Image (cartoon, rainbow, N blue to C red):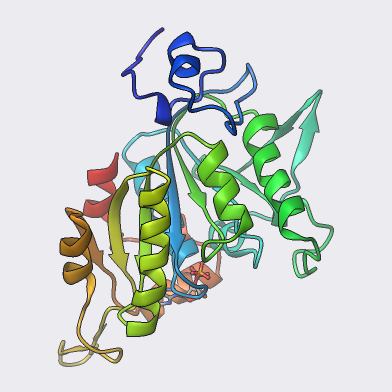
Amino acid sequence: MVDCDHDCKSCGVEGCEEDEAKNFNIFRAYLNKESSVKKVIGVVSGKGGVGKSLVTSLLAVEASKRGKKTAILDADITGPSIPKAFGVTGRVVSQGDYLMPCKSEGGIDIMSLNLALDNESDPVIWRGPMIASVVKQFWTDTIWDKEDVMFVDMPPGTGDVTLTVFQSLPLAGLVVVTSPQDLVGMIVEKAMKMASMMDIPVLGIVENMSYIKCPTCGEILRPFGESKVEGLARKYNIKCTAQMPIDQKLAETVDKGGIEGIAENPLADFAANLL
Ligand code: ADP
């Protein structure tokens, strides 16, 4: 097999004898024969609103800028954050037996439940197992055309959908998004422990809303207290970390759907380490 590194846990090739021998695939969902994805990275957080979707978007933008064919699978159905950040308003369409992802202006393939709703402000009144099966179907039934990297925007926390994604997608690893608040830190440790129990490596931690830089004097203010990211990284032996400021301009850019046009990506170096 081409490009086989014998790391069966992060491989999506169905029917491989080595994979079957290692028996990783009891819950594994496989890509269709039209698709290939070299690397799948999950983006998780302990709770909602810490900027997980923003981090997913920034990582994808940087990967694409670096010439990687990039995809986003939006498994967080709590809001249309991903399509909104990219200004994507199209509808998911089917082609024969398959689904076609929507494309961002810069060519990132995006699949999101929010792109399948009649109205993006409609709530998704579904129980966990149903959402989980749709996310799985997005993985198996979408034409993912020779993707170098896919980022999966997970729902917050450690519920049904997260568990399904952990079990069925061949995740190369996770990026954990946190904020400096103690309580959030405690919740995020649950996500870290879940990853470790399921044998999925944490590739890096992003501490979002870490600080504010005063636009007039440049002073760094830390409204949520001192950064916790280095302590957390030491505790779990994670080498790759980033701190992201609260940035009003970035929030405005996201609101306007212009994330691919940002001049300075705060996660450029962090993303480069993951790719
Ligand atoms: P989550 O996916 O964790 O629920 P989002 O990424 O959707 O969170 O972010 C929630 C809101 O906060 C969004 O409107 C987003 O643009 C904004 N936001 C997140 N991080 C920052 C930041 N560092 N600076 C400014 N706004 C931010």
